[in-house]
Image (cartoon, rainbow, N blue to C red; front, side, top):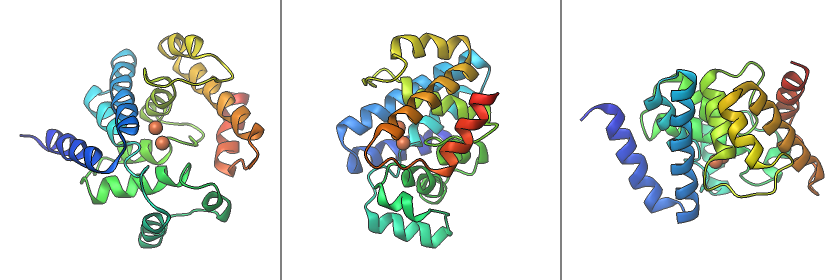
Length: 196
Ligand SMILES: [Fe+2]
Ligand SMILES: [Fe+2]
């Protein structure tokens, strides 16, 4: 059995034990959607599937678990991010956990996990694949600023445009929420892609 299959099996066991069925089906959806996007855009489908499969591996972490990993790996988490629960921290901590617990060494995969919530300027193809798949996967059902019926086909026509539209949706969503906290990383990515 190759290393890739071993990680998928370990991730599957971990998910069944530690995450809700709702979260698990979202994760499977993101992995499958990432593989489809990879085939469409000429990226390694196995790597894309694995990145999708692990993208939310730290989603079930408690504040104490997050604190442990943030301290252990000296991860940069501004105070405001702590105040909004695990919605941004899980991506940063997840990248380190994917390396430590699942033994993923591939930097492209770890980066795609790290940046899947806020993106970054000049995202890699894998960053964009996972970022997009997270938003359009088949289980996703939400009222977004741009309807999913538009975003889904757009993702297969023009990935950069889809990333831009998703950023716009996220930005609209956060700025309308009562917490109103827009992380500097989200703003940086948003400005970059909107002006591109
Ligand atoms: Fe996530
Ligand atoms: Fe997700």
